[in-house]
Length: 396
Image (cartoon, rainbow, N blue to C red; front, side, top):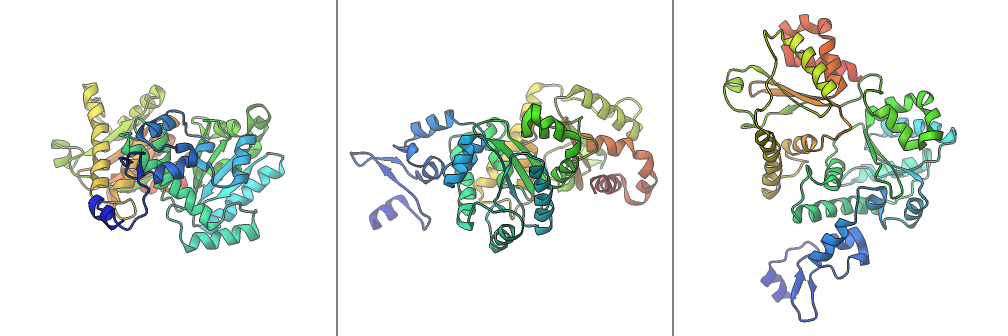
């Protein structure tokens, strides 16, 4: 054993080395495969790992596989399941109360609390409070830890095989859960083996649940998740339910005279041409540009390179041993890479190399649409700071 440790430079972390019948090492660490698939991963080879991933999709079954027998039964029965997390007990109480109203209205729905990545004593205390005050929580603290351990194993496995969040929908879903730092919580809704997964941030889901009387009548026809999606998918959602915050500028992302001269710059994206047209029109009105607010990148290769650089930043940070808990750039990279088709569009607005504001879809459009309400404050606080304040007011 000491020879193996010295020869392979094994550390203190637990690993599972796989050897074939001739003593040849076929997998330096098969623990990730065991955590994800259990005995189904046998013989724990690279080819078996690829084979198993080829048959997977981002489903409730993949997220919860073998964590608890009852949870496995719920998945096989095709029940609606809500996995949610937060350390904020006030938000948990409010969310649980809203969900109880929906269940009392006759909607079948199972709720599972999982806290947050790297669960601590606070999460353990929340588990006790939830079981006592709100609903019978299925998972013990150890099972909650295993939930996050499996997600981390999925991340390592996917990354080791060369997958990226921009090209692999499973990895994008995993990263979004692992690096979700929203203090107001989050929720993921799914059903059995269905790929129809809905993930919602805390403030947004509370607003949407408050509207249940308006969209609850669709449950009979569309089922719960389909009905929920109708109120979440823009433009059906009345008013903004998105997250906006200042993010640090990563030097080198944009170079040239625009950054050097401290001009206001807006990077935006999306596939919805209607949203793009109305957003750029409104932004042009606000900027009072003589001709046009922005240019498109003239070459598709440059657009590809923009996203490739974000992927490279992520891999560079990982190789340096950085984590999202201590490196503020990493979660922002993940958020940029995980912008999904659910959003009409997104925008990042900055000035020079100072601070940035990021917004998604309707909330940035509505903020610019109401420019006349806050334009006088721009002289005192500056454009971005005033824009941020108004966005904050819309969210609250």
